[in-house]
Length: 289
Image 1: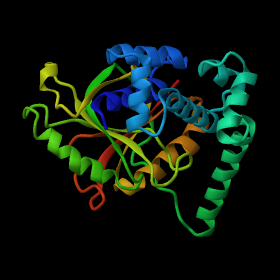
Image 2: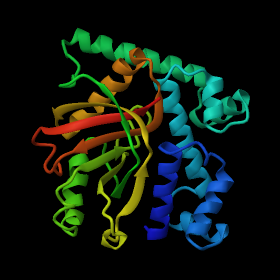
Image 3: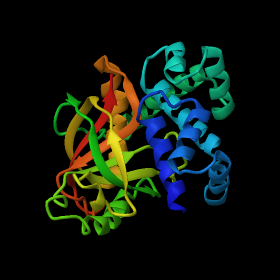
């Protein structure tokens, strides 16, 4: 993929899924990206069509609808409130856009998710499968802005270890003091909302003071400041999605908080190599309000 398009894809995902709600106007974000790339909107759209399966407008809409789905499923926010937060002019406009995309209304989507959780828990009880639990209680922390250099990957949601094994190449290019970590993984997809083969995942390390040290294939991302619900556990890579299910579907509804961003984060003290074969100490987190 053209590095310019890779940059734009990264910015769309970050701004829509994890940043503020200021960029939900499609035209404004497309114009900003075109200016960043020093090209016309027409040229940007043509490059997107050549290298990517979406147009810029369609990819923004795809990410926005994904964020809306997570807000509906994992918060008790009224639909009107979600509509306004997501940049829609009215609840009616939000309902039309959501239904057109997902082929189901927002209220039906929330009901379906509730039934999905109840059925999943029932099946686990019938088969005697205890859900994976965290080693420590969930704690609420307030984090400052965090800058890090990251590489974007796509692949199977059960194969995050492949991403980290590859990311080790980039780490070897960094000064010794930076390669000691900590390391961050960002997940922008959950199995409920995307086809099983597809996952967008970012592997990252704290950014250094000199931007010239940033590896060519990495992008700088700034995580927003704010409250985060976090807990620690030892797990395999393939167990992470189940642990997030526990955090979002069991802890969050009883916590009094709601999900702020459709991004889930992992933090490691060391790079998690061969994560599919050995349990690694992992700090899991989600942004809340």
